Length: 116
Image (tube, rainbow, N blue to C red):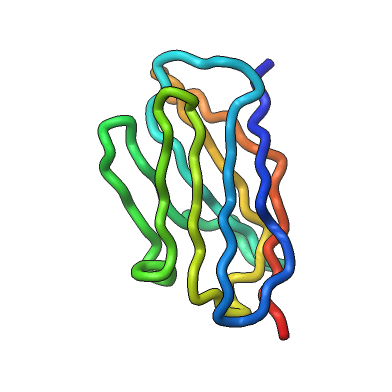
């Protein structure tokens, strides 16, 4: 069973930056879209950003201009560069990978806390 391994979360002050990364535990082929979701306490999980294998990106309006998603297709690794972080960005961030039949694989989640 493939697992997605995330890293890069932590505590940061408002206005700061963090970079999240996510990779599968073994080599995968025919990977389709990869992306990031987040879930704040008491709220539903929401999309943050996605990137297709062809390079098309999609961002939530709340993070446009501040977050940037990138991926290394050779390694099936995905990154989320988060700049100008705000307290409302505080959440558990989950990466997701869709294979060629749109089977989703989820990471275990990494906590991001933005606080002074």
